[in-house]
Every structure is written in structure tokens, then in C-alpha cells.
Length: 164
Image 1 (cartoon, rainbow, N blue to C red):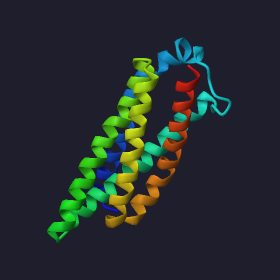
Image 2 (image 1 turned 90 degrees about the vertical axis):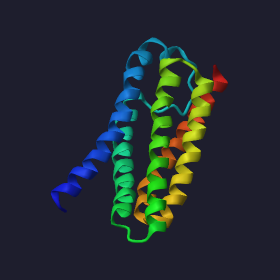
Image 3 (image 1 turned 30 degrees about the vertical axis):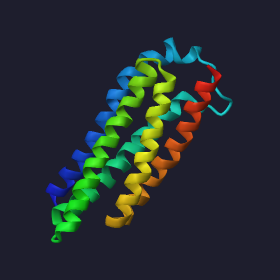
């Protein structure tokens, strides 16, 4: 792989990790001061699990988004170039909602707003996967763990809302 391509994929990964880091700013203080006071469902995973899972998911997301973007850079057909541009734009809109979930949940302590937000994230992941499938199946596979985790997180968010 050429240095340029390595830097491009690292750039996409860095953007995803930065979105996670912004969310972490709102999360760190809220966990010991607010989150621990909430009623938690019995299936709540340990807090230490979230960090490694999200670092992994943001890395996979970055690789998938880069693969889609790079297909557009190489596309000779106008239609394919347009679909990769749309998919890349959709990815960044989705990433905005991903980042704002932590702000809603941990920053504003608004569990309902976070639940609405995560439902939007879930829908956008499915939409991205359908869009990615037409362009690059590997990118769809890279998003599969993310869809599974966000599905679980949506159930967890809904349970916390119901319990509080």
C-alpha cells in the first residue's frame, strides 16, 4: 500500500476516533457523578468494556468509510462516483449523530433525547450498510459489529429510560 493511501485511511480512522474523543469529554465526569445514580438493567456491561469496544468500532468505521471514499476517487463511471460521494456524506452525517449521543446522554443527562438519537444512528447504519453493499461489500462487513453493538446499546438506552 502506498504511503498516500496509508495516510488517507489513517485520516479517516483519526476523524472517527476524534468523534469518539469528543463524546468522551462529556462521559468521563458524568459516569461517577450522574450515571452511577441511575437504575441500571441487569444486562448492563461493565464500564471498562465500552472504551475498547468503541476504539475498535471507530477503527472499523474509518476503514469502511475510507474504502468507500477511495472507490469514488478511482471511479470512472459518473454514477459510481456520485454514489460514493453520497455514501461518504451520509457517513459524516451519521458520525455527527454518533458523536452527539454522548452529549445528549452524558452531557445533558437527557436519556430520552439520547434514545431518539441512537435510533437515528441505528437507522443511518442500516442505510449506510445498504448503500455500501452496492459499492463495496467489505465495507458492509466492517460495519456489521457496529450495527450489532448499536442494536445492543439501543436496547440498553431504552431500558435505562424505562427504569428511570
